[in-house]
Amino acid sequence: MRLTWWSRAGRSLLVLIVIAALTCQLALLLPGDPALILLGQESTEAQRAALRSTLGLDQDFFTRFLDWSGGVLTGDWGTSFSSGRPLGATSLTRSR
Image (tube, rainbow, N blue to C red; front, side):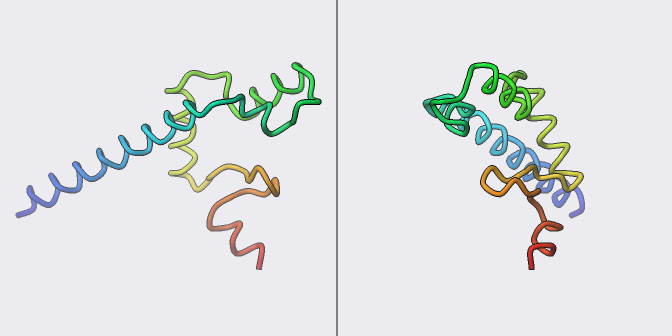
Protein backbone atom coordinates (compact mmCIF):
# COMPACT_ATOMS: atom_id res chain seq x y z
CA MET A 1 0.00 0.00 0.00
CA ARG A 2 2.81 2.44 0.88
CA LEU A 3 4.65 1.66 -2.33
CA THR A 4 1.55 2.62 -4.30
CA TRP A 5 1.26 5.90 -2.40
CA TRP A 6 4.93 6.76 -2.98
CA SER A 7 4.64 5.78 -6.61
CA ARG A 8 1.64 8.05 -7.14
CA ALA A 9 3.29 10.89 -5.25
CA GLY A 10 6.42 10.56 -7.38
CA ARG A 11 4.43 10.55 -10.60
CA SER A 12 2.43 13.57 -9.46
CA LEU A 13 5.62 15.47 -8.69
CA LEU A 14 7.05 14.55 -12.08
CA VAL A 15 3.87 15.75 -13.81
CA LEU A 16 4.04 19.07 -11.92
CA ILE A 17 7.68 19.57 -12.93
CA VAL A 18 6.92 18.80 -16.59
CA ILE A 19 3.92 21.17 -16.61
CA ALA A 20 5.98 23.95 -15.01
CA ALA A 21 8.80 23.46 -17.53
CA LEU A 22 6.39 23.46 -20.47
CA THR A 23 4.68 26.58 -19.19
CA CYS A 24 8.01 28.39 -18.88
CA GLN A 25 9.02 27.27 -22.35
CA LEU A 26 5.68 28.30 -23.88
CA ALA A 27 6.06 31.78 -22.42
CA LEU A 28 9.28 32.14 -24.43
CA LEU A 29 7.49 31.28 -27.65
CA LEU A 30 5.20 34.31 -27.42
CA PRO A 31 5.92 36.88 -30.11
CA GLY A 32 7.86 39.99 -29.22
CA ASP A 33 10.67 40.95 -26.91
CA PRO A 34 9.54 41.09 -23.25
CA ALA A 35 12.03 43.88 -22.52
CA LEU A 36 10.70 45.96 -25.42
CA ILE A 37 7.11 45.34 -24.31
CA LEU A 38 7.87 46.38 -20.72
CA LEU A 39 10.03 49.42 -21.54
CA GLY A 40 8.33 50.64 -24.70
CA GLN A 41 9.54 51.69 -28.13
CA GLU A 42 11.38 54.77 -26.82
CA SER A 43 13.82 52.66 -24.77
CA THR A 44 17.41 52.22 -25.85
CA GLU A 45 19.06 48.88 -26.62
CA ALA A 46 21.24 49.32 -23.52
CA GLN A 47 18.14 49.71 -21.33
CA ARG A 48 16.55 46.62 -22.88
CA ALA A 49 19.77 44.61 -22.42
CA ALA A 50 19.93 45.66 -18.76
CA LEU A 51 16.31 44.60 -18.22
CA ARG A 52 16.92 41.26 -19.98
CA SER A 53 19.85 40.68 -17.63
CA THR A 54 17.79 41.66 -14.57
CA LEU A 55 14.95 39.33 -15.60
CA GLY A 56 17.37 36.54 -16.48
CA LEU A 57 16.23 36.46 -20.10
CA ASP A 58 19.85 36.33 -21.24
CA GLN A 59 20.33 32.94 -19.53
CA ASP A 60 19.58 29.54 -21.04
CA PHE A 61 16.28 27.79 -20.30
CA PHE A 62 17.61 25.31 -17.75
CA THR A 63 19.36 27.98 -15.69
CA ARG A 64 16.21 30.14 -15.63
CA PHE A 65 14.01 27.16 -14.76
CA LEU A 66 16.29 26.03 -11.94
CA ASP A 67 16.46 29.57 -10.54
CA TRP A 68 12.68 29.89 -10.74
CA SER A 69 11.98 26.49 -9.15
CA GLY A 70 14.51 27.17 -6.38
CA GLY A 71 12.79 30.47 -5.71
CA VAL A 72 9.37 28.83 -5.59
CA LEU A 73 10.61 26.23 -3.13
CA THR A 74 12.08 28.92 -0.85
CA GLY A 75 9.06 31.25 -1.07
CA ASP A 76 10.58 33.78 -3.49
CA TRP A 77 7.98 33.98 -6.25
CA GLY A 78 9.53 36.95 -7.99
CA THR A 79 8.45 40.56 -8.41
CA SER A 80 5.28 41.99 -9.91
CA PHE A 81 5.86 43.77 -13.22
CA SER A 82 3.04 46.23 -12.55
CA SER A 83 3.66 47.22 -8.92
CA GLY A 84 7.30 46.22 -8.42
CA ARG A 85 6.41 44.48 -5.15
CA PRO A 86 7.41 40.92 -4.31
CA LEU A 87 4.90 38.15 -5.02
CA GLY A 88 3.97 35.33 -2.67
CA ALA A 89 2.16 34.65 0.54
CA THR A 90 4.10 37.25 2.55
CA SER A 91 3.27 40.03 0.10
CA LEU A 92 -0.45 39.29 0.44
CA THR A 93 -0.37 39.85 4.18
CA ARG A 94 1.62 43.10 3.83
CA SER A 95 -0.84 44.65 1.37
CA ARG A 96 -3.82 44.41 3.72
